Length: 265
Image 1 (cartoon, rainbow, N blue to C red):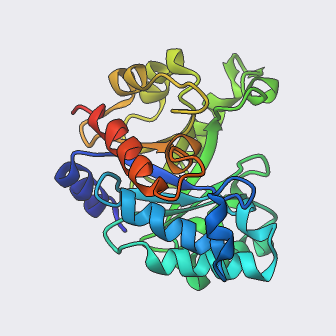
Image 2: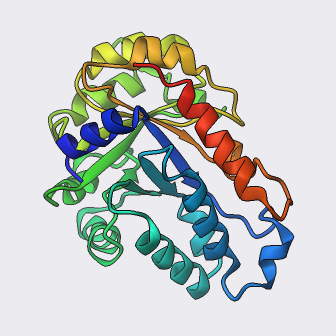
């Protein structure tokens, strides 16, 4: 999905919500364990309950690859089930030397046909550029993440600026706002004005809303641009809203609509 189409769907739905499909067999409703593929069954019901409120889905690949072949099969079926109107993100955080990155890019852009993949920038340009060679696909580069450990390295200063700023500035010479996004965590709301100044035209994928307690209002106030420029991700706060209930889909849908309702633009 290109940028024009993504912005179109955001404006049409009045939503920039991304639902994280982090299906955990230890957390999904127990009655689903009777199904042949409980992960896919859970995802299918979450998608049905949320598709009208969101514009994107983000499976976290770790929750699938830890299950071996069955997990990869669940992921493939999930991706096939997501409507074509929704942006799809492989939250894989991959990057390696160039020839290995090419294989990762082939896996997520050719075999699975995701629209985007999250990439770790630590190894530099040659680990990222193979993903940017795919027309119509996106790299979502980790910049300022939402986890507590983000302060271990991302705030370290080099040449008078924090590392996350260097990452964002340098990466913009590799890609364009049409194929490059940044992960910017909602748990750093005080930084969003600065982040938007660093990358005025790029989309931000924003985790940390919901279970991690990020500040949505601050993110919207300082992070939006003329094309909205945000994908707000919520995973646990939506998909597990129904607990162990047999009709969990109702609570899941309500949680998605509640968050969508807060997205004013």
